[in-house]
Image 1 (cartoon, rainbow, N blue to C red):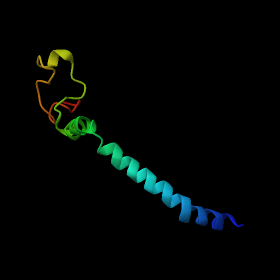
Image 2: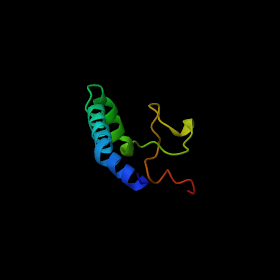
Image 3: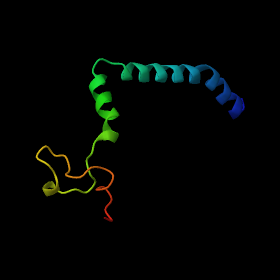
Length: 77
């Protein structure tokens, strides 16, 4: 049997099953009960005003920087 034909038969049968199992596994992983907190934290990463390269002395007591993004994040300034 030719290589192309063998791979074509595999993709038509077991490849489809493997992709469906992977898809449903991802869906179950995303919608599991403990995933809400992790998804919420990941969703707010762009809004975190942590400045790249800021020192401890340049931060408030809560750990937030004195300046906000994007002006203080540029190292050239």
